[in-house]
Length: 482
Image (cartoon, rainbow, N blue to C red):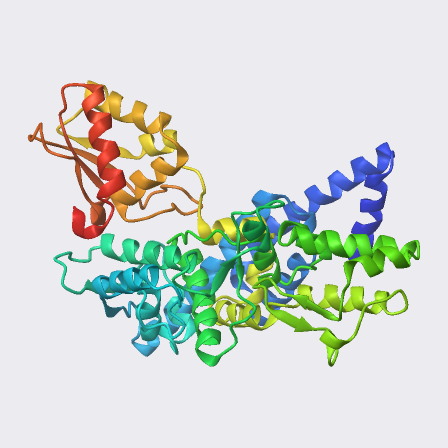
């Protein structure tokens, strides 16, 4: 089948009308066969046969449409969740939810000390931050317990010294805080790319895995992150992670080319290209001008010897090809230890053959949710209590939200729900946004994050509404504030 498909792919690249028609027909037939198998056979066949069919479809998934991939992935994931659910029912562990204690005052004190201290030492031992506090409860928990039904929560949270009761809002808030910490200087598990640090090249806003962290506690933390990714896909609790595409591709075990590094470390990528050109043209003076030894820096600016005593070995025309090959290989594999831990965590929860149906963009969106708010979808999933959709205050609210910057739209989402992202499915049936009237004209808007509810006074003008909304999304986004 693969050979036949490859033949049609080659025909499709050529100016061959018959080949193009046959290729489109073949893709259509694969889609029909897959749907027929699922509808009439898949539900009743033996497990071994299911694995065989999944293997057939997965090996040819590149030729299926995006919608068919997603449909097939959701079907396999649903079967996986049901299997785990049945096992947990038998073991009596279904709906097992830890009640975990999180001390946000402790985390805030750590932030203050970090910012005041010139040494800037992050939470290496994972004891002070919110991520570290949650991690200690889940360091050795079976990955299967991270596979949840849609809308379920991994844990209930007791916010120490705070009055909040967790009916959902504090949970979403803590997940958001963990993601924010992972992309901050308070933790070292993910780092800014060299492109970000050098203010050069593309994808400067993306984060990379830290290649320097390989102690047992850090390996366990990366494994925990992999399990959290599985939790987000199964439950729909989107993780606000802005990771470099290389990470998603490596988890999927996609082939990685050195060209990826142009969007990670533009300076290093350009150096290698210049050296390859110099090698091709045997430009000894150009090579000497770089004054290189057999050592490079990784993405966290740490020196890596390419050979024994690399710092003592000069690069010249005779050994340049060896230097280039070793430098590429080291950088391409610099985060293998950490990625293997993330994969170990993820695949302990969700089978590899289920995930690899997706391409990396689909995988990222499954984990991280939508990176834009669909305001029309927002409106369509909003209910009003005390107001009508055509009241002036409601019209003003939607006009403000529609015209707000994307950053402010997500701040509103966090204010009203505790979430910083919605899942790939958007609002779906499980989310309803509520706007309810309160009779306190001069007060600030407030929210009930557990119930996705905005409590909105009936302000007399659009200007007052905008002023009040801007204030609360900037200053009142913590659970304890509202």
